[in-house]
Each structure stands twice: as structure tokens, then as C-alpha cells.
Length: 121
Image (cartoon, rainbow, N blue to C red; front, top):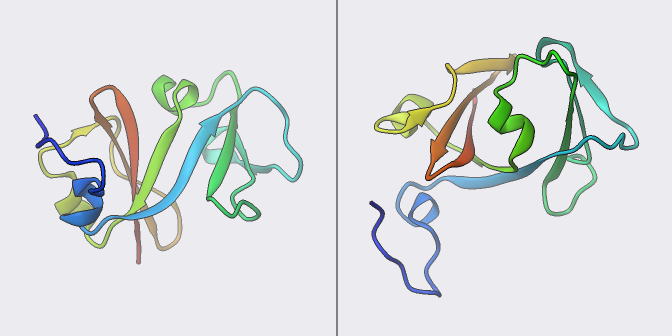
């Protein structure tokens, strides 16, 4: 169970763990302009480069290997300095992956919500 925080306090992921907000991933079935296809995951992403808030739209093919919770529930993503340290004691949705060179990603589940942790090398 997490420690209760006051309204004015940031989440402990930020204040204690030094995680940094990266983006909000939102699943969609709608085609968006300038989608980028990621063949490995059979998904399309868009919006991240242009959004001042880091919103990324994600559209999946029916046979995408990405976990169904990621395909259906929005997730918040944080940049972390040490991915192995960040996942200690956390519930991993899938194994740690490397979607592209120099990037490692872990998806965790916290109280039913998916959270993405990203380490840039």
C-alpha cells in the first residue's frame, strides 16, 4: 500500500524515485495524421513529436503482440536512470524490451494501471 500524500505533494515516483514524466500513451482505433508504424509491435503511433504535453496515440493491429491492457487502457510513461532498479518489487506486465537502439522499456502494473518505464542509454 502506498503512503497517503497531501494534495500539494507530487507522487513519490517523482519526489522520491526521481522518475521524470515522458508521455501519456492513449490507445485508439482512430487513424491519426502522420502515424508511424512499428512493425515489431504491429502498432501505429502518432502525436508525440508535436504534442506539447507528450500525448502519444497508439493504434494496434488485431494480431499485435502487445499486452491487451496496453492496447485498451491509457498509460503514463516515466524516464528512469536505472531500469533494473526501478522494476524491483514491481509487477511486470511483460519482459523488459528494447524497441530501438539505446532504449529499454518495462511495462509495470500498479493498482490495475499500466505504467511504462523508459531508460535511455
